[in-house]
Length: 216
Length: 192
Image (cartoon, rainbow over the protein chains, first blue to last red):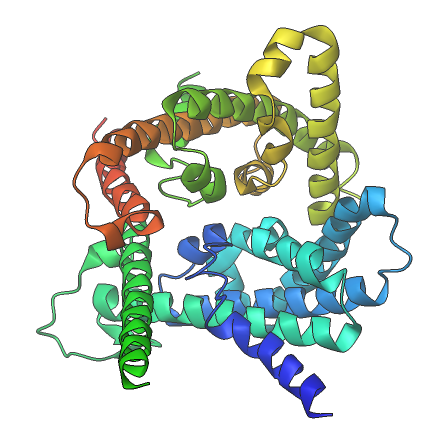
């Protein structure tokens, strides 16, 4: 059944680019900006969010017949909070250094609007495999965005990447980039870049359509 | 006493929840279009924060010492139900205030600044009075940032901004500049 497979592929790929939760939908900003002052922190946060999103999408989708409509939001929140607790404790056990740096922002994954949004908009209405694929796509998109932001900020603000010195001792780090204003500025510029790319694509498509019209 | 003043000023200006902890960004970017509405949302948030601080203290002192792993779940459940309760109470007691706050009350549940407040004040080991002062400072700081942002955004509506820049990208860059301005406050107490 090629159709089903193509659909599944679409669900997966849309989160990465076309509906990227951060760059296109501008969701889940709070953890996004707070922890992306280095690539490692960004990856850890992205990984934790990945786990929580995929696991809760799976559970919500498989329990969807039994969740009463009136209390669905609270049910989702409790499911999400359970997985966040698990992620918090596992990270503390596995990577205590990173956990200390992320600190209070791991519990805050609970209120990441992207996760609740996916449960309400997708997982509660679709079959388990589709919900999981959608969650994996969205979470990868989120991870990608976090990683992009974290890398830019670490390279410019610290002159290093994953803690490895890049430019030698002559490089004067832009300290502002690892501080809070740098987060806002970098994300603003990245969003600008994304809407520029989108604009270019649309213009190109229009021009192609015009050219096609003239030919026929 | 000076300790309490320090907690208040620190939450209000130096460690402003929005501009240096990035908490509550969704309403900060979403609702900051108009000055009037953002002021009301800010006040509603202060109110919910104070109640949350009280609940967080109660939970921490009486329940969570026995079951620390329930922290995240119990906080979020308590916040959600408090907001609902407060909404009903205000509707009953003061219909006028209810109309003024309107749709903002339920929205506050998903504001990460509220959960952030509960978690930060637990991590810092604040007592009841300290927690309440911290909540007041954080809430007013949130209001301050929201109102400043709304004022700036109303100005940019009329400014000749490139079309691509409009929307979230511009707001984020404004927020970045505001955040830089707030960094200036970090020297406020170290000299004294």
